[in-house]
Image (cartoon, rainbow, N blue to C red; front, side, top):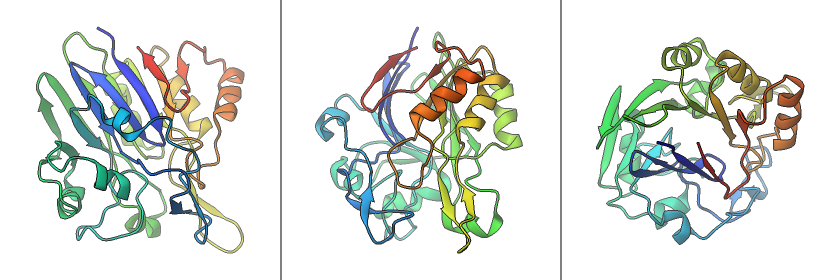
Length: 268
């Protein structure tokens, strides 16, 4: 059976899989609601509007799956691009939330009362969700700021296996997990998010970019790639056009690499 992935914006998707609809990493604020990661004195993020109303986004959602929250344990902190203040306000507090264990306390602190921690794997009805570690940066001094991150593998009888990388750079563990599961579908965060590290303009990379996405596609030539997390935040420089052009040069067929527009639904 096929699955449907509706890309909303940033890392927010509706994944219809195994009879359940998962909303991922909800960032539901209107355009320009938050200060930037690069332009910290300007209201620039998100840089794109929601493609539909919050009611439309939440319609049919059974549960929330979060790769990482950026919500501190006490529930107090700056804006998160993976579980933002608008999502905290708008989502029913009894909605099931599936999240890495280290982020569960913060999500409970902001009022959610149906939080399920994923250490290794969890089963949601007939769907097995397996967690693996990502790495938000390979510069150790920045790890306390960006925190731990997770990717997830979806498995269910009769459905394609999906691997969602989450916010990670390429690591040996990420590559080994892809090779272990040889997923039918890989969802990559491909915006190349970065942060400055000094006055000379040097930056630290926080997630995969176009070249990394192509490397993933070449590693598993039978997998279909869905690339998201682009053109929604001020510190993500990779555009859809750049990824499309580079993938064409690399010989990645159009029927293998999908770069959805905000609001677009893909059946795979």
